[in-house]
Image 1: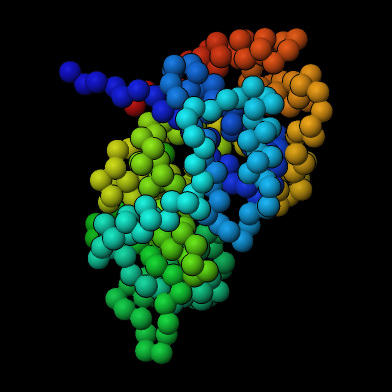
Image 2: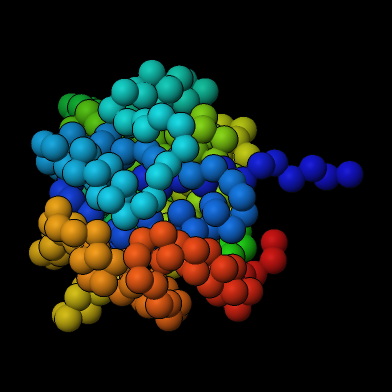
Amino acid sequence: MTVTPPYIGRFAPSPTGPLHIGSLVAAMASYLDAKVHHGSWLLRIEDVDGDRNVAGADQHILASLQRCGMLWDGEVSWQSQRGELYQAALARLGALIYPCACSRKEIADSQLSLTGRQAQALIYPGTCRHGLAPGRSARALRLAVPQTPHYIASCSDRWCGLVSQDLTDEVGDFVVKRADGFWAYQLAVVVDDGAQGITDIVRGADLLDSTPRQLYLQQMLGLPQPRYLHVPVVNNELGEKLSKQTGALAFDDGGAPQALLQQALLPAARFLGMELQASDLDAFWRVAVPAWAALLAAHETPN
């Protein structure tokens, strides 16, 4: 008999600024999914990219979640304090890791010569796979992806359905430690999810393309594969994903909880497809949990 492990979800924002309505949508979806499944909801601050971190943003994020009534389980974790775990994972990957001297411009130029046009995503051509050219110095560390046969990574997303990608052809060997010395997102998130026993990842669809690389890393590190659910992302009036880079404003200005309800929580729920009515925060969460359960029935794809 197969025993299903207890549900453990997480919300993992980057402290590049305060939460905006787009990040609230992702937080709300992951929080509600944990509540519907009577599970735990962990909070992890993904501050591994030190150059983009904004001082005090992590504390603002914690305060905003609390003010919304979204209380996490256990202690908050910070990626910047988990470097030893990432280094140990790198050691476990062993011979699959190799140094790379290529810059982004060199990779882009190699694609121009092959395709005659700039590709939308930079596919690594394997220049340094068999060693650095004379006179070149390592910039980053890459994880080798199988070449023959091609490596196809697939999973069933609970919202989007089948997710499949030919990593060999569409991505190539990808970076696990960056040229600036920071750990790459793909490695850090997989190691953290494995260490924290995450069973379910609920996040924005902008990260859907990252999932196949994470599936490959999970397999290479011998980690269990979580279930995935990617919700739609909020766009601005130009059709761009709402983010700090596109000028997204904080939804929490420290005002009254009623303002949070009307200006943030109810609109975020509406974006996810839940038309809710509530007079206060407690009432909001009471109606939001069963509404999320009903929404899942329409979108969820069985594994």
